[in-house]
Length: 131
Image (cartoon, rainbow, N blue to C red; front, side, top):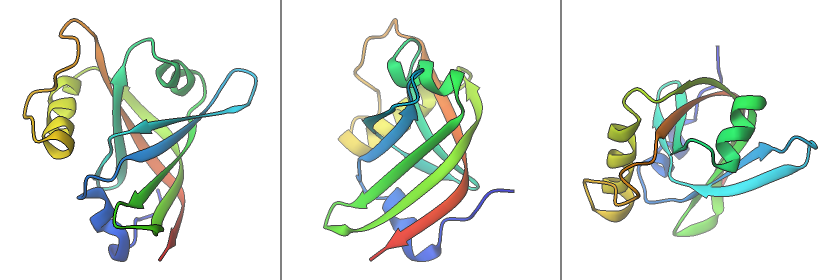
């Protein structure tokens, strides 16, 4: 069972707060990427395209960390260390469209139509909040 996001910081997943996703390179060095994020209990959800660095890293090593900062107060944030427990292409285009609507106000994602989208479900193992 994963750790829960405290109610005090759940709003960060509703805002247009760009998250920082840390994955591990084959060498063990961390790699950080800005990502759009959503929360569907009990999972933190991100979406990418097949073949990107973060995609390859999460397929190889399920350990990740993600931080979501309040756009109005950079000292208020939630940090999640967790495991990628599901990687799926099923419904991934719907997820990126929902994220596009949230972050850009565009109900259809404007990225390359031929790319294969992937959704990653991250089960929180440790959660830290500040602010």
